[in-house]
Length: 292
Image (cartoon, rainbow, N blue to C red; front, side):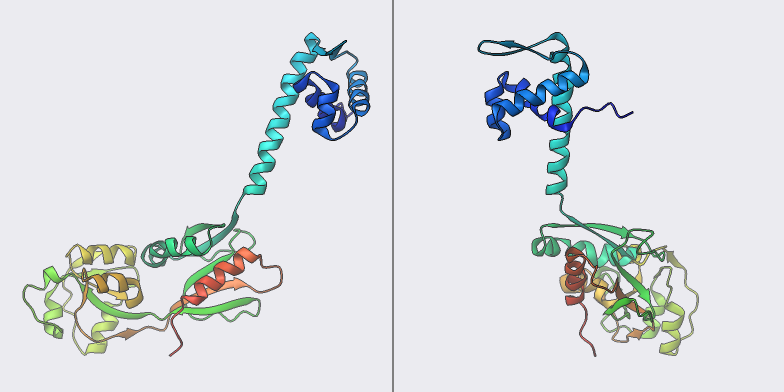
């Protein structure tokens, strides 16, 4: 059996208890004084006890009424706060990004995004795992790989993976630029999980003499180590554009390793795509490198 009283009776009781006056409560609720009085009587009948003493110039709580009103008023306040929270809640969009892309490109550009879309709250998931749009609640995805062939997806190539060799100027020790292949072999190398050094040396026609270097699980860490002067790193040029412009990193030779895998933007097709998701997708798309 549902023992909850009618909501209208609770609203009338809440208002009447705030003002201890049926007329003031009626003005607050936008109904007649008689309607408030009737709804309170129905509530009292439902509970089997009086909640107010009717006085010539207003109302006074009974002992039970005062205790009950405190709980009812608190419950209505919780409902008001919950409703305001939902109505004021910004649009949330979940974006799944590879860790290096998130650290090296997305984070530096978040301020620009927030200025353009102040009412959208981004939830950035940094992972290289393949996530499900539905099961994992992901709205927009950026992935490094070959272009996916899926009729259900919108696919945009964001950035080509044009890999260059960079280092801090402070480890060049007076060497002029560009470095020769032999000079490059003498410098400590920084490796990441994609380790493109063997392929790069093969393109240069050089034999890698296996000089030891630091190894990192993410390319973003290799870039940080390069900025700190700990060696030379192979990295996609767009991921270090800021450091190259500032001079904290320099490109030590002109050769570019164009890899087959690139960075792609993905989202589900269809009219059900929320406006906030569409805004994020279009903002990222507008930052894509122009087609060659």
